[in-house]
Image (cartoon, rainbow, N blue to C red; front, side, top):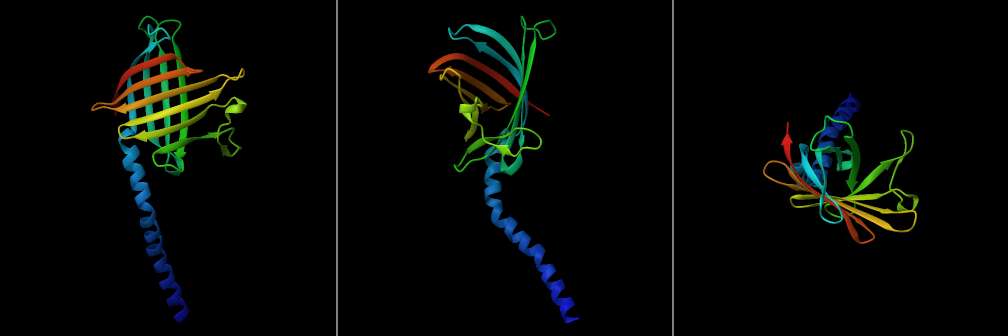
Length: 195
């Protein structure tokens, strides 16, 4: 009997211990939610694409979805529809979809992309020397920046920065593509949060 009571007491203490452990880990999770929380959501909007000479090259419709991800990180999916003469219901329209998963790095406010080669491979970090772009993200107040670095076959480098800036109604977009130090494309746009 005494053994049965003792076991019951030990098991009764387990939820309390689990609660204490969760409480100890909670500040980090709360800080993460406070940092990323304002960005979580779905946004739709439009953008203009500017070439190297600063002239408008095209227009895009955009959808951006930011959601909580694994390991206290986040997943971002963006859809770009390149319009033809301001329309999306004519031949020549292109639609691109990209998704990236970011997990916290060892620095506050910094996240690194986690990649998966296939369903059966472990996640790994990108290797720019193998042609894989290396992506990381940074939260800085009302800005969520995603950056991509790649090394081309001829040794030149490419760097892209994609800033999403919180507004009262959604996100403003600032994109810049740099090739060997030269800005070759910029994109600016506005989105609204949707339900």
